[in-house]
Image 1 (cartoon, one colour):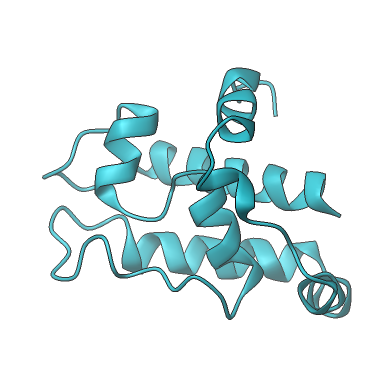
Image 2 (tube, helix red, strand yellow):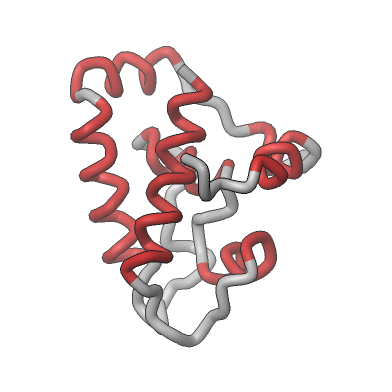
Length: 117
C-alpha cells in the first residue's frame, strides 16, 4: 500500500474517537471465515453504494457503528461519511467519488483491518 500516507494511521492513534475502534474476536473470526477477498468485496460494495454518490440523503448516519468489520474500519479511518472524508482526507463533498478514490478508500480500510488482525 505505497500510496497510503502513514501519517493518517498516526493521526488516528491520537484521535480519541477514531482510536477507540477495534476489531472484536467475533469480527476477526468473521474475517477468517469469509477471507480477506470477500471482506474487500464487501468494502467495495459499501463504499460504492453508501459513500461514493455525490449526495447521500442520510450523510453522517449511513455507516453503522457495528455489525460488520468494514463498518468499524470506516469509522476508524474516517471513511464513514463525506464530511469525515473531507475533514480527514481532503476529498470534497458534493461530487461523486472517482473510481481511484473509491479504490484508495477500500485500500485504507483493508490496511486498517490487516493491522488489527
